[in-house]
Length: 156
View (spheres, rainbow, N blue to C red):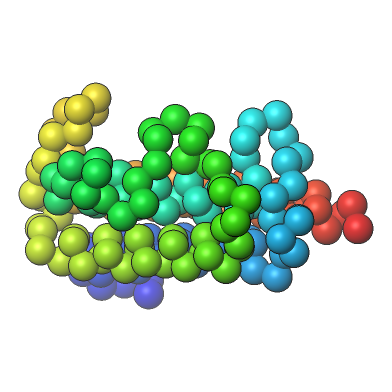
């Protein structure tokens, strides 16, 4: 979609970047998905885990106003959002992100682009801001994922 109403364009671009992020891990082995190739906790599977956290934080916590304990699988707001439990598989983490994304779509449907909520550090944010923020974040992380995948593939 390259033309149309603003909201549909924003929703489409967010979905496009969600899929681009998932595509960076499709077909990786469990071991490769967990490989740390940088000093931070960033791994291919960790990027997906973090994206699910971001969905919950912005749509469930901020937009819907749920308490942390009411959010689906809420994780710590620091680097803990990149941590994947030993028992979680790549399929599990992708499914978690897809569920969080679907719930975000459902939540957003009840809001207008200019509706605002208060973020504890950022101040008032609109749904439009949340869409733009996550479009940017997921595009950036898809780029990280592409680079990690390239490094993994080159090492084989």
